[in-house]
Amino acid sequence: MPRPVLDRLPRYAAGKPPAAVEGLASYKLSSNENPLPPIPAVVDAIARQTDFNRYPDPLSSRLRTVLAEFLGVPAEDIVTGAGSLGALNQILAAFAGQNEDGKPDEVIYAWRSFEAYPISVGLAGAESVRVPVTADGRHDLDAMAAAVSARTKVILLCTPNNPTGPALKAAETEAFIRSVPADVVVVIDEAYQEFVRAGDAVDGITLYRKYPNVVVLRTFSKAHGLAGLRVGYSVSQPGLTQYLRVAATPFAVSQIAEKAAIVSLQNHAQVVERVQRLVDERERVTAGLRSIGWDVPDAQGNFVWLALGAESAGFAELAGAQALSVRAFPGEGVRVSIGEVEANSRFLRLCADYTKASATS
Ligand SMILES: *Cc1c(COP(=O)(O)O)cnc(C)c1O
Image 1 (cartoon, rainbow, N blue to C red):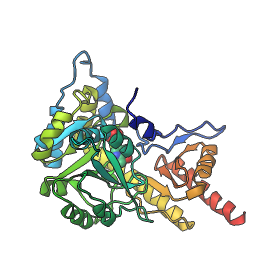
Image 2 (cartoon, rainbow, N blue to C red):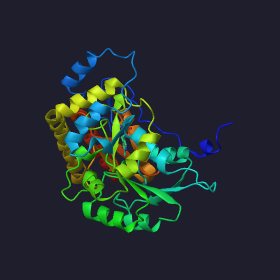
Image 3 (cartoon, rainbow, N blue to C red):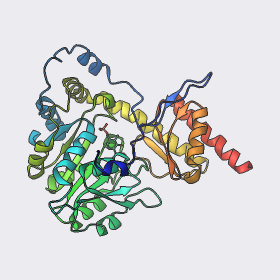
Image 4 (cartoon, rainbow, N blue to C red):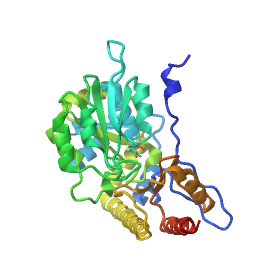
């Protein structure tokens, strides 16, 4: 029989592919993927690789060397994983689960936030403590600090927050870290770090340098457009990293994924240029929505959040009829990824039509 916790876990609802609609190109705006393929140098490099009869380097040593230089941190402080989700599972496996007294440890995170969190926390054997985000989609850091108990082992901060969009500010995040016990691990999930343009936003690497209980999570899935290859990493000081290495899944990063990540970093200017195009589109979409009266939270990732409440599922259906797949969280809101220019324009037209229809009905 499976562990009882499995019955209590939500199912991860991956973004659906768009439905085909006669006469319209379909666009998937439901998984926060990069609409652009990996940069050509990456595609070339992995096409030439053939050494798959061998296991990959379990320590991803070459990638960690390149990352260490890129980030200005010791390679020893980096632990890779199968996506940053794999890296997160390693953190939870090392620091949160069922305690020696048979009771679950507690893991605090904002809600709504990344939908993988409750699943990863539950599978680790720990208990989720969810603290509602504010009306404008931000972490309520005071309430999160107040939720810390003797059982709290890990706190997850998601910045920018998926699905609502705002980034944490540097000053509030540092004050928060100082206010929680130093033996609680604070994870800063920066999956969308490259898309942030808010001047006062937190930088996890700065905080990792100062605080031995901070772990930063980053990924090649979003900005680098390598979601399908599964490569991400955590950065923390040796006091934590020593345990993450014990918990790490052996061979989690394949040699293709490692090679792709290295070549993408070596061509970083191209990645930055593509990210900027998406940021420009994000700004166009949020400005367009606000100009027709939609109240969207500050969007710092590659997605926007429509707090449509009870209308969320209906709106997603209308989008589907326009060959756009979006991610509805029924009763709460709809997350729409920034995609191709044509997809974003069609989404804006849909919102304008939706506003007109609601005004006349
Ligand atoms: C997409 C995402 C991830 C990254 O997942 P990978 O496992 O790296 O593909 C992590 N955290 C958040 C909040 C995300 O939205």
